[in-house]
Length: 246
Image (tube, rainbow, N blue to C red; front, side, top):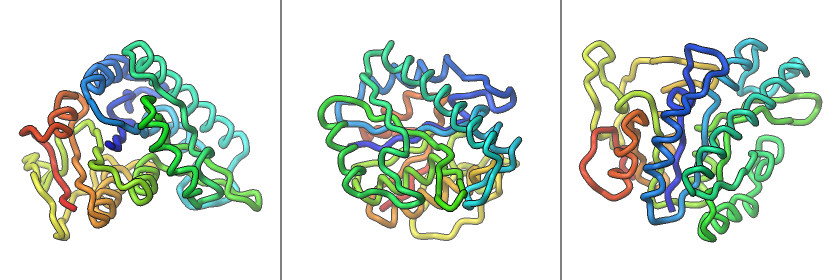
């Protein structure tokens, strides 16, 4: 089984609020159709959820946020999710919408429900979950990022591979020269904080990728603007990107 996170920076235009990148979504869907094993998709918020969570000053830490903000963020993520589901359907991928509330209670994963996701994938559907704002109890809410969902699912499901799809080639050791780190294995790498957003940007991805790889799962970071790299990573072919070895 393959776990894939579609970054908000790829599936939306982060410079323009509420603007999906339909072309990129369709191209990724076309490539995913070539994969011959069960896949689970998680996607970020990009210029939908992130845009509103910044506007309403909402974060990953549980707090008493604006109720209107909670409603608007949740609504925008459903809107973006629908765009992705429509693209997947059009490209014959049989998506199965899976809001995080289906397998989370407060900030804890419901293991039994997480295990169901792999069974859904093995039955020929493509589960599609996403970062969202969740109720925490005691009048508090929090942002659950798509990157964090990747960590939660990987820990329980132990996929063969985990892939983070970005709008850059991978992890750079130097942002100015765009020097790509092809492999990260048990080393602490100093990485520039690039494009930091409300859920941690690249820093969050590196943290989750490191944690997932420590659990024995190989993790790839690839450029979603060149979606054939996703398939090459899955099939073990040579590709440009960063590997976190388990």
